Image 1 (cartoon, rainbow, N blue to C red):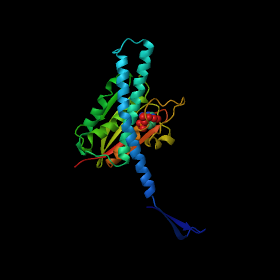
Image 2: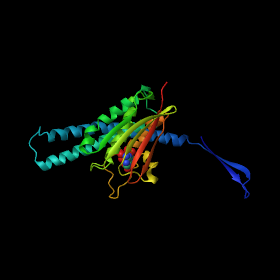
Image 3: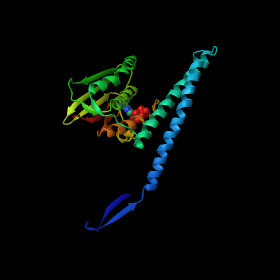
Image 4: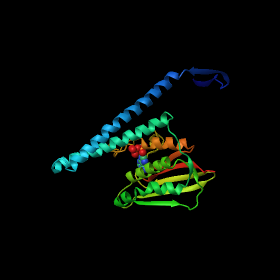
Length: 262
Ligand code: ADP
């Protein structure tokens, strides 16, 4: 049941009673569970054909089954690229539906925050270099360990650094800094960029699924709009918090906190 209680005031502001609303939400919960099951089944069914499509297109591009001209090669590359985006979307949808239906198992152990940051960042070093963006890690040695699922926190870091790279200028002025510091019983991790920033009205909403800030030209540059929603589920499952501090045009700092382990 969902219960809502609201006081009734008279015109002097004195409390003269309450209205209690009780709603049976069993049906709503059932529908919600059905929706999660549906998304998860459909995503699963999509996986196999998507893999076949990219393999077939890859074989054609490799000229395994005969010569192709430049135009055909370009079309095949477009197919492979869009297919990759679909595969990512399906995998993100599956992850999210697992969290929503409470089917995620967490593998919590004592982890070194430095190691997780290194692990996530190393896959972006080349891309950052290619784009002329500086990518810096600023973490003190010997930080206390945190209670964390290594793969899931690395996933969050990968998503945050990937976003920072995507929304930061490539003219040599772009700078991304990843920090971790100790505060009371938590470690606070931040990923800062000096990219396009996020308008105030979007700063909370981007953590909901499918919310993407539209550019002036309506282009949202790939992405699925699920990354931050999944990141939020992951951090919440660790008992931590995640938020953003940003100014349009100046850049963004994404923060998340994790409990120090004992
Ligand atoms: P995706 O990046 O796949 O679109 P996310 O959930 O990771 O999805 O991000 C949601 C939206 O938040 C993005 O589409 C973008 O508009 C905005 N955003 C995320 N990170 C940044 C950033 N570092 N700078 C500017 N905008 C960002």
